Image 1 (spheres, rainbow, N blue to C red):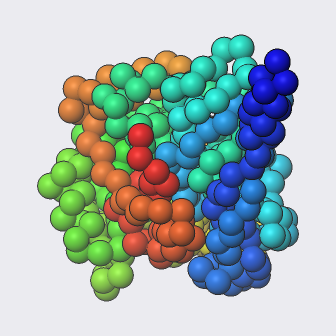
Image 2 (image 1 turned 180 degrees about the horizontal axis):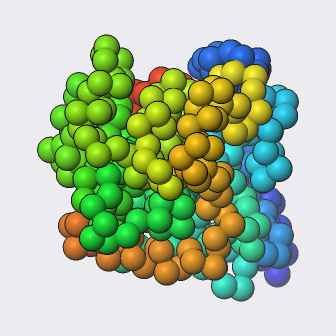
Amino acid sequence: MEVSYVQKKRKNTKALESMKVKRVVLASRPGNDGEPATENFRLEETDLTEELMDGQVMTKTLYISVDPYLRCRMNEDSGADYIQSWKISKVLDSGGIGVVEQSRHGHIKPGDIVTSFNWPWQTKCVLEGNTLTKLDPSLVDGNLSHFLGAVGLTGLTAFLGVKEKGHVIPGANQTMVVSGAAGACGSLAGQIGRFLGCSRVVGICGTDEKCSLLTSDFGFDAALNYKEKGLADKLRECCPEGVDVYFDNVGGEISDVVISQMTKNSHIVLCGQISQYNKDVPYPPPLHPQTEANLKERNITRERFMVLNYADQHEMAIQQLSQWLKAGKLKVKETVVHGIENTAGAFVSMMKGGNIGKQIVQISGY
């Protein structure tokens, strides 16, 4: 009887032990006008208590998403009420996917694949089950990382942005231009513009390699490298009848050029302004006076698009994106780096255009 009690006591003590996990914290801020660098991040080892409270789950992190909007979270004030600034020396978070290893939540069991918009940059996590969404791997043919891209928030942004703000009319012979076209959202938006009825799609990106991929893999009619001279003239050649729909991921001078060639009553999908994220300006950033005049004179709509405001359409959109993906219609590319120690580097590279398609960090295998 005594031996049995001692064994039970030792077992309980073991259950309360902690494990070592790795995480990434914010070491410093780059400043509102500074470019982020890997020195702004720090890799740490910390203890994770294995004891779960009711409603909690233990997860192993599989994938972490790094996206341009995270640059705003590096400032003391994110400039947006829907995202919080990262705190110095605290673990960072973004979109992520993990597999459940232990659970004390009624509707989540070990082996479930789950996701969160605020997933810690940590190899293993204890999370509140009610903050997680269970995923169905069959929607992406088992390619789980697509839940952070084409069949996740990125895909929702591209699809609903074009659908709600692009005003695409099938058969109307509309021309669509996408900036940041080789990135996670842009590469999807151009394809979706075509699916919804645009007759011509032109992409703008930063390298000749990306231009080639846009036309060969993603089905764009033409692609322009904005780093080469003569962007305005080349855009005019590609869009002789003007631009009817502009999916804007970058802002700044590139957008000024595109907007100068937009038609009357045309539409801008204001998705992102990555060229302005390292500058201390409000969001959306102020426009050049001539650009403001063009918007007014031509009655061009330019309203900020927030995908979180269209939650009632998310389920429908995910199903549609999944259908396109599984049918081979929606082409997807990812730039994947491996290991939590490379998360900061992946983010910094993505901010400089080092990615093609969605930038993903694979933390562990499944």
